[in-house]
Image (cartoon, rainbow, N blue to C red; front, side):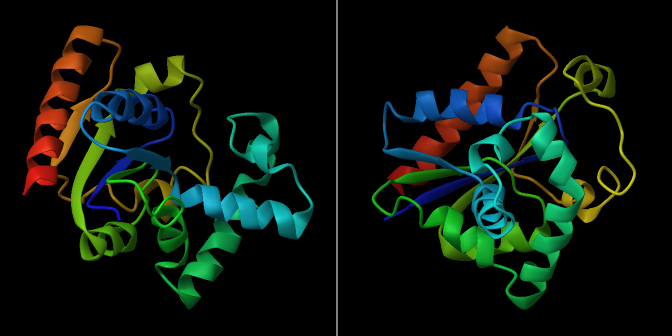
Length: 187
């Protein structure tokens, strides 16, 4: 059963997946870890309904970008019916793990779901705009100004990690998060 959820949020191209994978490697020293995304179950269901390639929707490729706006709108309709629908699917994907790292929290309802589900560490990944642009970011109206990108901008996270390309500083922050997680898992 999941004892700890690390709920990661951040803007597009801030490095959420990169940080989540590195954190998972560290945490596997002390726990069984599952990486999941709220959007993964959304994309899987959306792909089935629209006869699309699910694996392609998981990438940063053109297929995902072509369907992003419609997927967001469809997901919002599902969330209006049940705010925890996709969160529940994400955290239950591997019920035998100790720690579930959620790579893509987007809304306060996501954070509320996980905090009510089990111990949760809310981590925000921040990267300067120029750094995000160097990673391929460009602003799209209707996407980057939507709740799916801005819903947690003012949320009080437990830890804010700076991901601007300084590996030594990133590692120091990852060690801090690792120590917090070890403490949460042992209590």
